[in-house]
Image (cartoon, rainbow, N blue to C red; front, side, top):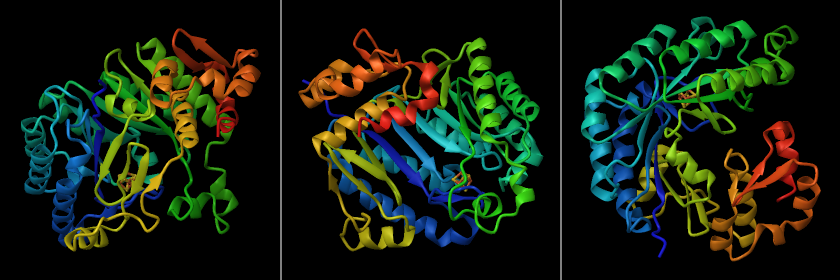
Length: 388
Ligand code: SF4
């Protein structure tokens, strides 16, 4: 029998300060000190409530944000102990904490180690103070170097570095320099993201909104340059021995992020904390993005969900999502798991789409996997739309 084990995500909604491009739910920490204890109080109630969704334990843990390492030592330890108290995680299962340079102290790393955290994801973005400043990041390149040194000294053997391309005034040379420096630290995993201008952020106003000025716009690398940056990185990382196992993610063999793989493979996930998203047995819900309201709801015995409440997904929606997420992976969509989970064969349900793209070599079937030919990843969105 298949054991039902969702992955567990815990959202910590605090950062030193808000970055100029950030559309995630996070609050500046200093002005929210009173909120962090309310947040933890609410989180503990939520954990006690949701424990029932993972009766066999959880398959992996990811504490993300925000910046979890902005929490003080005592709060960080309390958070980790709460997770251990309410959720069973098999020995050796992947447990990741996300953090940003400037917030990583030796004492926090000792707490993480003691509580079984075995993977660390560091938001470097660029080893270039000028570029970091241009997007409102609060850390410096030297703080990033220092954080990597501390992580290794503390014994972390599975480190991810996040890097961004397409930053204002970033040219190919600057992008190459950041990626080469990242490689010099031999991280086990790299996530590369193109800058997105999200509406409502200061960066959008500066570069993409109605009031942005044309001079500014010229500072942003255009789509062609962004694509060149991406393609160069893919080749460079391949040479360096990293597998390109997902659109934005690269890993040394055996270091693919198990937590995210579960999500892309369509496994259940439980997301706790304000803004956390869960999907268990085809029912999806999202927690409210307001730490105080989140706490108050839980304190008064209510669920902390967004107003729309839990949504039961139709079989059709779940199948489309499985394909769309699975085709982001190099391995593709597992046809046997699809049949086991939905009782239908991908080749029957999407016969027309498959025929159209299969004959052109855009979609391929390798063993038990349906894959997107990487040469066509530039039209991935168009193809994926056809499965909706
Ligand atoms: S560190 Fe990350 S989550 Fe925090 S404000 Fe910056 S982009 Fe947003």
